[in-house]
Length: 361
Image (cartoon, rainbow, N blue to C red; front, side, top):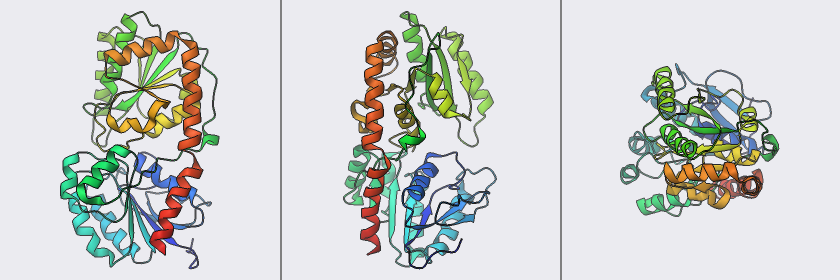
């Protein structure tokens, strides 16, 4: 689709294909394309054509598996710099990863003065900030990361949370399954939340709670996922959770949330993943109470979730939540209201529209 010269042209830059559907960076960028129809966007794609409702066009990107490895990052830098010359604004949606310091120093001179807006979904390691240069005005997803960026010389960093469309994630009544299902989300990385969820569930089970644990655990490119999943099954069995199920990628998250009662998200390290996890927001929109670890970034969700150290305190919260229907209902209502009020399209759109106007003026 040819760009309309009367409309602002914005290059959406992510570390992987925007339409790959397997990364929260891409999901955040897609939210921008959907929330701002008055803008013509450019983005990288892996294969399929863009949705007709989105303004602008996509650019094919060579990638064997969609993973943001060094060849893919170099391709993003080279092709992105060329495309940026035809854009009015570059909007980078990039976590501060180990490769970001070098990228931030090498890429900016290639843009020939084009304005850049940088949304930081997460930070792999705060030590990377001292070696990184701001790409331009910067946005964070949480106050914790905004303060860290500001202290590292990124200037005044506003906070704009991710967008969830409540109409796409319907509020559902509590499941009537017996035993109830506890859904644990996380990753196979050390401290990624999978083993922490098993530990918390074991604490609740030993205290008398009845439930089935389902682990929806994502792997990173290059990980031997089958072997990692088998290790999780073995650990769950060792902890006495014999009815546990381990899933890889989830094909139908709305259905999985609908049959679940409670969601556990207990990572000890985010590894560059978003400060406000999309899966957690979708669970809250569906009316599923969420128990999270006490990482400081998760304070962005305030009292919409329960935050606790793992495994013992989180396990006791799980036990209490399963035994107290009135508390379950209260948290379900609060979670849905939080998504509608703080993470809906209107707030997301107004925050970014103001930044776009200032940079495009």
